[in-house]
Length: 377
Ligand SMILES: Cc1cc2nc3c(=O)[nH]c(=O)nc-3n(C[C@H](O)[C@H](O)[C@H](O)COP(=O)(O)OP(=O)(O)OC[C@H]3O[C@@H](n4cnc5c(N)ncnc54)[C@H](O)[C@@H]3O)c2cc1C
Image 1 (cartoon, rainbow, N blue to C red):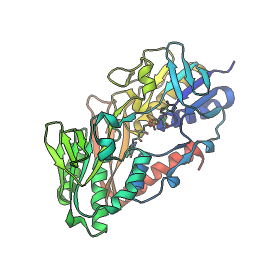
Image 2: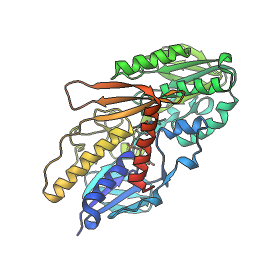
Image 3: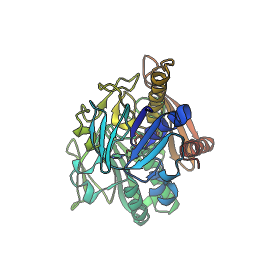
Image 4: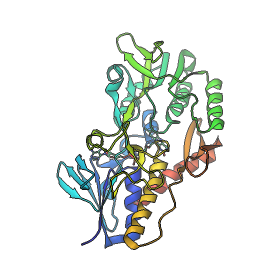
């Protein structure tokens, strides 16, 4: 019997893991990659969609394009996970795994922020970004508020990028002077592990007259009064609200009993859960790294190398180093980069690389190299 790995979720983590396993084993093992969707979309593409720089169709990478030895991709919805037995139930059947990897990402709990669904516009899903592509061009005067409901949330720089790109959009339409922009963030600075990055973003906000309200959550929206209520009771009246909803692990993961404080605890070095043969990577796990694709990808590589070692009696992989580079849109075609290292040294570090057109090109390359590697496109 061939060994088999069942990977739940074909996002950054699941795609990288199945790719490395296929490269290492080809048809010698059976990899089953399960996702409820029919296509992958990069997180950063949502900003491009909401600001009309592209369309949802153009940024979809269909799973049917994946053709890798040893890998089959199934479009199924996971409905139950039994981590002790390594058994997964989906809407189409049951899968038994020698190695089970949970890579189901983080879901949005829009209802946790009363009024957000009716009175605000979340921009963290493709559907939300698509709706905003219609709404943003109609906003020409008044107060725009970008607000985050709670931390942790995916890609900590993304709401800052949203504020800067909104500024550009309003300038391009000649209406910036008729609009105010405020940005509410639960964190003390825009990118806490990198003071230099935070300083550069704060300077960019100041230059563009974007009001930054830090250390505050948006706790509710009053759609009738068009007011965002913050967790200190203060209210911000708005004409346009762009929101990041509260995140949590998908319900099916919470129901499996694997989570603590909303996410799956793992050994940061190995990504192993407390269940033998069961790993969790990416946004669904608490691995001591930010919720971003690059870290899901890095964690997936460690799990892949560990399975290669197990199944080939090879050398154990080095521990997960929690390193990764995140690109940050500063507007006007310039992109910055922060090189994060959360686990390899005694302290968390984040080295800033100033925004430039060259880094915008590097970000493009980051996306296209993944599309080529995972989808052959
Ligand atoms: C606006 C925005 C900008 C971003 N920018 C960046 C960036 O520049 N760089 C970066 O590194 N990261 C960025 N991110 C974050 C990045 O998108 C995520 O952190 C990353 O996708 C996490 O990878 P993952 O594999 O853990 O989960 P995901 O990529 O979210 O994949 C999880 C998969 O599980 C599937 N799934 C969930 N539940 C079920 C179920 N019950 N049954 C079957 N399938 C299921 C989903 O369909 C999904 O495909 C950004 C995110 C946003 C929202």
